[in-house]
Length: 129
Image (cartoon, rainbow, N blue to C red; front, side):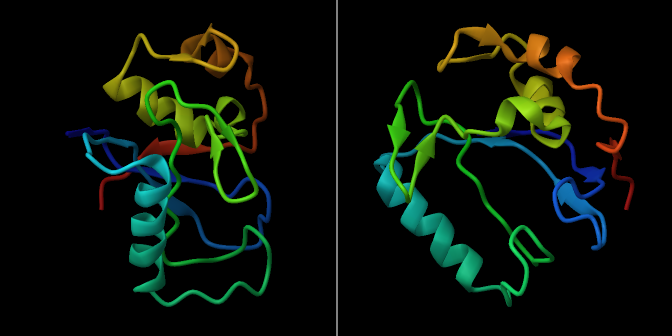
């Protein structure tokens, strides 16, 4: 298992909320992708969360970005994560732990995806506590 540093990031979609803390973690598991999703949902449910606004404030949000080279496009699980190539808060920590990683969906290096993001509202900085 390896993990990136913590990053403090400005909200992207629904902006009227506090900044987030983000990190990317690579894990090895014997679970299937759907079993892992069930486990992450159980962890999320253990934290208080009221979904008053889509993509709004929450205590914890765990996303599965990729699962080996598996592709899934169900309502419950989309792999690779459909918006990961457009989010600095995903790509910067991901590239920290896997600098040569690429998107299995279109075979594009994630570093190329990061260079294409020009949105000045996607603020990200190393979190120092």
